[in-house]
Image 1 (tube, rainbow, N blue to C red):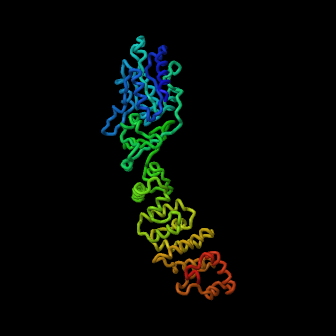
Image 2: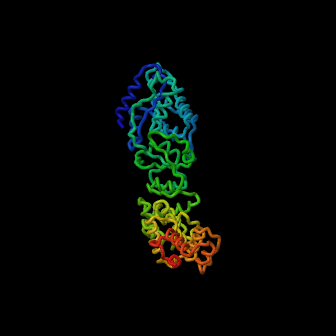
Length: 443
């Protein structure tokens, strides 16, 4: 920021001699917060032999408290110097949490403050500067639309100042996640109001973490503006996405909080900065891009967390795969249901790529003990399909399966016609090029 140009504007304002300029000391000064902010403010105060009024000094520090509109106005009237310029810091950070109506009444009430003796040149030049690091548009709208003396006085010292256009991000964080944040962190409302004091050590290119429990509770009241983007961390997924830029596509469910917390701890410890795919590969010890490997892990693991992780990852990152279709219809985490579904799900799809993936998954699972084809369940699919195809209301013997002579007798169909009908059905459902891995399918 060009502090020299700002000093010139301040001096020019002081030299204006109309009664309104002499009577009303309140001015608004716009600055962009960066790593030089503290030095620039201290330079301004020193250059005009002024005093600094820090609103953070008047907040209950122990209780992570706040300041009401009436308390704020009372502090300004009581503590602004009567003989020197006063530079007020923390104003824009305070009114961010005021309602639109409160912002309007607060700004306008400041113009109840007057210089005591406007005939005295020194008294008439006294100013109270409210430094705004943000909320610039909000203040300007109030004064342009509701300030009765706007034709008589311009209270903006540098209304032509333009922000760099770079949004700074403020993330409000609950206590559940605050302990995990180690840098770019403010912990109380006092530190928030006094943010300018931390400007030298804050990295404005990454989120600033506001871990004040009070402000987290009030964050929905925070007004957006042209300087700071407001965001909030509601859960572990939000935290990973905002703190580590980790893209996590599967949804957050409060009932799965324990799994999310384990994911967070494992990711931060072992793969910070890596992609979700890299994390899955590290955590599960398999190739995250291979549905065969993931299906094998799903079959062999007894960890409820690992099953949850596989299901969420495959459903979000490999959602067009055959294995994703299988996981989507699972009603439990049992290995038996997983095997049955992998076998049966292939009967209802026609996509060649998915059918090839099914064969590959089955061959992978055949490597593991206890992964024998679910012959009984496959036979049930065949028999139930035939009953539906032929509109039969009969039961089939599990051992002997379908009896063509019996079906021919019931339906009145010739054996050759019945064979042709069933052949057409079998080809449609079982697709010989992609089946035949179980005895029942072969039969």
